Image (cartoon, rainbow, N blue to C red; front, side, top):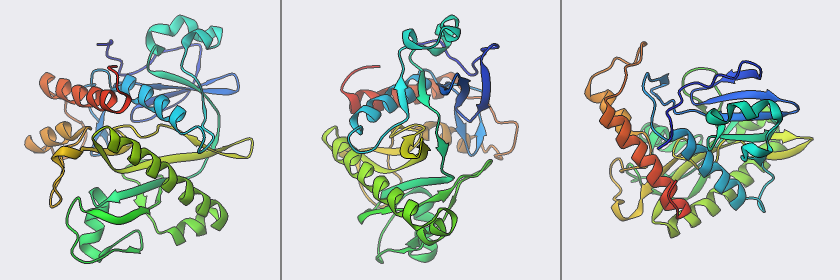
Length: 295
C-alpha cells in the first residue's frame, strides 16, 4: 500500500487548482494532474483519506484511455515520471503512480453523462416525472432498473455543490447543436464499449460521466475515465432491480456518514480506520476486476 497523500506540495511548480480529489499544475505548455487520496461525500471533502484511491483513479483512467484510443482522441501523454520535465523529478514520491502529464484543453462546460440503469439523481427524477433530463421513460421502472436503451443526460458543471441535470435542448442552447450532438454520440459510444467490456469482467456499468475539451480545435476526452469516482460499477452476480445495489465506490463512506447522522454541514467528520480501509479495498477490487491485475 502506498503512502497516503491528502495534498501535494510542490513549491516551484505553478498550482492551478485543487479540486475535491485532484491537484492540477501548469508544467510548460502541459497540465500535470495528481490524484490525491482525498474523498468527498455529500459535496464536502472529508478529513480522512482513502488508501490507494489516487493510484486507482489514475491507473484505471490510463487503462481506459488506451482502451478507447481508436474511439476518441484523449488528453493523456504519459504517466512515467522519468519522462516528466526536470522540475518534477524531485517530487517523485508525490507523483509516482498517481499522476498524469496531459495536454491542456479548453474544457467544455457540460458534464456528459450516460445512463444504462436508473439510479441516483436519475431515479429521483423518474419518481417525480417518469422522465430523466427531459427523456420520457416507460411506466413501471424501479430503482436500478435497466433502461430500454442507454440515454445521454448532460449536466452543467457547478463550482460548488451538485452538478445540475439539464435536457439535451438546454445543452444545445448553451453550446450549440453540432457540439451537443457530437458529445452525445461520443458519450453513448464510449459507454457502450465500456459497459460491454465491463460485462466480460462481471461488472455492470450502471452510469458514468465524461468531460471533453478542445486541444488545438480537436474534440478530446479529458479528466478521468470510467473510475469508481465517475461511474457506478455494480457486481453483476448480485444485481437485483428494485433497490440500491452493492457497488465498487464510496458507498461505505456514505453509509457510515448516514449512520452517525452528520448534518452534512462543515466541518466534515473524519472516518474510522476500518471504514477508510474497506473503501480502499473496494477501489482496489474495481481496478483488479477491470484490468485483470492487482494494483
